[in-house]
Each structure stands twice: as C-alpha cells, then as structure tokens.
Amino acid sequence: MDNQAERPGYQFAGWYVDEARTKRINPGGKLPSAITLYDKWIPILYPVSYDMNGGTNSRKNPQFISVESGVISLHPARKPGYRFDSWILEGERISVLPERITRPIRLHASFAPLYVVHFETDGGGRIEDRETDENGYLDSFRPPMKFGAEFTGWYLDPDCRWPFDFSEPLTADTTLYAGWKSSWFPVTYDTDGGINARRNPVRYSRSSDPVPLYPAIRKGCRFVGWQDPRGTILHEIPAGMMGPLKLKAVWRKVKSHRRAEE
Image 1: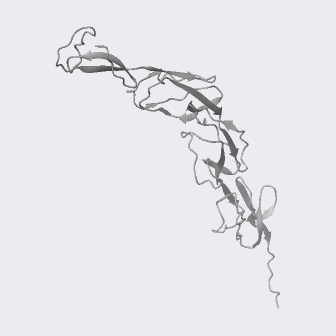
Image 2: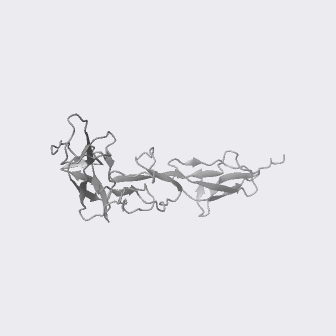
C-alpha cells in the first residue's frame, strides 16, 4: 500500500492495524478485503535560527519548533552598551513565536542605545547624566546634598508627587527631580540677665519668609535687639539664613530720675 495522506507540519509514519498504532503493516504486503487502518504522524521539527546583530542569544530561546509547540515566549538577547529592543520576524516585531508553525524560522535581534537619565537637583550638588543597564534599570547611587535641606528621594515630575522606584525598569530617556524638605536649625539665647519672650522660636528652617524675633525684658534696661555672632543686631531671622543661631540680648541702661526735693 503506497498511498500516503498529507498533513501540514507532520511527517507520515505509516499505517497501523491497531488504534494504539503499535502494529505497523508491511507496505508491500497484501491486506484483507475489509480492514480498518490507522495513520500515524510525527511532528516535523523546524529549525529556529538567529541573526544576533553582534549580540549574544539567551540559552532559553528555542532551537527547534514544531506544529505542536504552541506559543513560545522569546527571551531577550544581550549586547554590551546596548539594550535589547525586539525580535524581528519577517519585518514584524514579536515577543513570542506563534503556534502552528510549519516552516523554518529566522529571527533578527534588534538593539537600541541605552536609556539616558538626566537629573534636576534644584540647587543641590550636580549629578551627571547616567545610562541604564541593558534591561532599563538604573543603578542606585549616593544622593546629592543641599545645605539647609534634607533629600527625600528622586521623582518623575517637577512637583515631586510621583516617586521614582529603582526596582522598576525605565522604558525611555527620563529626567528625575530631586525632592527636598527643609532642615531645622536650633536657636539659642543669651538674655544677659533678662527674661526671654515665650514667643521666640527655638528652631527655624530655611524659608522664603523672615521669622520674627520678640524683645526680652530686663529691669532697669531697654532692649536694643538680638545680636548674632557677627555683631549684627537682629529683630528677625532673615529669609534664607541657615545653620545654628546663637543670639545675645543687647541692653541699654535706663537712667532713673528722682523727683527733686522741695
């Protein structure tokens, strides 16, 4: 019996007289006038080749595929100094091999430059642009410093509402924005024998607004002002000042006037 059926993606393996397909008939032998025959098919293994474009393939990617393989996920290739962009099949970008393939496959690796990250530090120390790794991840690094402020993290927006997560890959060139909160500085007072005003601050932060200072009191003296270590008389902490502040009360004695004796 020489007649063979055709089935795309399979190789005909012969006719069998049992449904389990364990007893193959002799192709040159004679058959009874009435018999049921069962055909057997073996999936054809088609080669999968790769054009690596200077990169290195993943060992997890298939070397062969058959009509019974189903959908197969493709793993990215690697190339130093580049990030993997996509696999190309016949001009189309793909991430999986489709099912029911019945022919050899050739895939082309596409690479692109690494993503570049720019940093806006808002007055902090300068950070040079950095590149991500091949998978789009940015390595963590020492944050910038800014006198009078505490670093709160990197953000994806200028208003610092959307935090950046180093554990998440980037998918495009990105600008990151440094977030800050004001540091608090202590204020100490030397009243030189007087009594300080309860409303005077014991700490302050860098601010766009001045912080008022209130006069102390001392019997027999008139309060002149608060003197900083440089000798400047202050009645408020100026906007933009930073660092611990030591203030000393400056007094001017008041002359007593006795009533003239009559």
